[in-house]
Length: 240
Ligand SMILES: Cc1cc2nc3c(=O)[nH]c(=O)nc-3n(C[C@H](O)[C@H](O)[C@H](O)COP(=O)(O)O)c2cc1C
Picture 1 (cartoon, protein in one colour):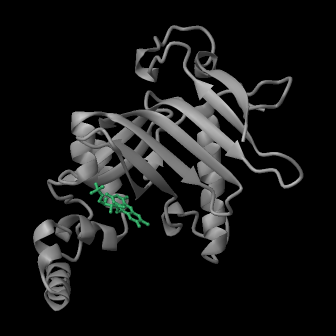
Picture 2 (tube, protein in one colour):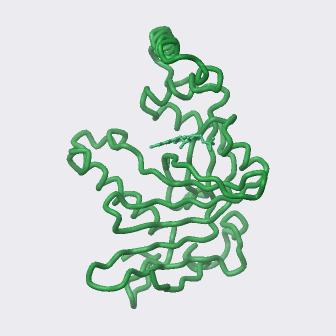
């Protein structure tokens, strides 16, 4: 039991810890589905396809827009980035434009076996260049090529031309790992609210709802606050 666990109930009281645990569980399920052993024999998690999240942003007309993106990684526990949920995209995309105008986002991750769902509400902030470069170098080659080539101009071209452009660019650039395009953009979602939904085949589903007392973001919580980050979250149990 970690410091972020209520000893009387065994309930995890730090949602950032619970989120990371769930992401790791979901990757294990994805690995099983993909027929990979878990943990992968090489210990290289990049062999396992990333977990997906449905990300909602606020459009210029005030209506939400959703799409699926990969959960690139989460901030390391104990670091200033702990709890942040990272995604990567094209800076010319609608989601990037939306976030630039209004950082409010929500995301939902569904377990591959549908037994769990977690929803996060928060603010998206642009990641730093080092994080963006590292994330790009860790992407599989197909996604590196995609980041370079997937623009609105190429999308308009006929299929044979798109394939030819792709093959020529790939042949001319055998290793792109250290050269992300200028349009490569990373965002970190800073959570202010979590909802963890868990199925129960012998009874009703249930949710754990975590909020901050006054809507404070992690960045504004002074390091000197006694106790753990978990102390700054309020948890309530809700019906599923
Ligand atoms: C399985 C899957 C994974 C995806 N992963 C990403 C991703 O990590 N980043 C991204 O920008 N788009 C990703 N996409 C494409 C997005 O869903 C979306 O079509 C694209 O980013 C443009 O969205 P926007 O115009 O709303 O910004 C993915 C799509 C699918 C189906």
